[in-house]
Amino acid sequence: MSGSGAIITLTTDFGYQDYYVSAMKAVILGIAPNVRLVDVSHAIPPQDVMAGAWVLKNTAFLYPEQSIHLAVIDPGVGTSRKPIVVRLNNHFFVGPDNGLFSLLGSTDDAEAFEITNPTYMGSPISPTFHGRDIFAHCAAHLANGVAIESFGPPLEQLFTYRWAEPIADKEGIQGWVVHIDAYGNLITNIPGSLLNGKYEGFKIYAGTSILNKIVQTYGEAEPGDAVAYIGSSDMLEIAVNMGNASELLNITKGAPVSIVYKK
Image 1 (spheres, helix red, strand yellow):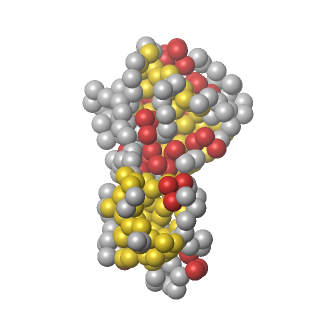
Image 2 (tube, one colour):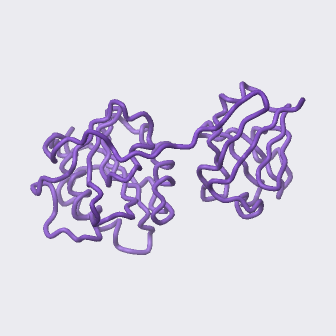
Image 3 (tube, helix red, strand yellow):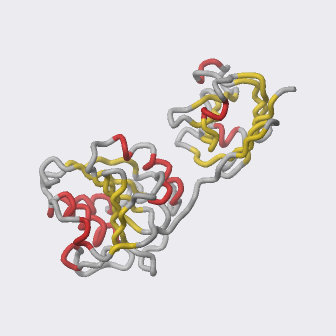
């Protein structure tokens, strides 16, 4: 891997109003001017590590192997949480060790290193902007071919979160809303595979809404009506045709979604 042709993706909760994203890009391009920068999202809800993980896990591994993914959703910036670089499935991830990277998939084969080598960090380091002063530098040096082992000592284990798993039995499936996208669609933790190809023969309870089948497209419902479908992440989702399901159904992240089989 070298700076020429290397890919760095950026995922943050910085928004688009301020200078933060641009400052990170300026640092990266100052070190690796030929790198290709790709914005994944800068509209992650502030401090929402799991939302950032959901967005990143559904896009990171679509990029070519050896891509570098800079992810800064960092409510613990400046505290004892560690800045790290991780190699997972032939991709590199740079950011805080706050659970985000543990949510990307199995980390059994992950190699993680704490970023401690001042050669690959800025100076001075702001206690509130490690994205610019630590992580952007690390990502750029990775793009220039610096070995992951050069950034600091290995970590034995990542700080770990786990996605809630649905509960399935002969009566049905109990799941939860794990993500709400920009359209207000409710993405659950129920994979399509749990339904065994069945699209009816059950009732889906989401808030005060009861749905009797799974559809293929939003347009199979009238505008303003709720629909259930298997989304692009292969998870059961609830939407409102031409509307915001989270607002109209008064459902927030963490709310239960139940599938009850008809007897």
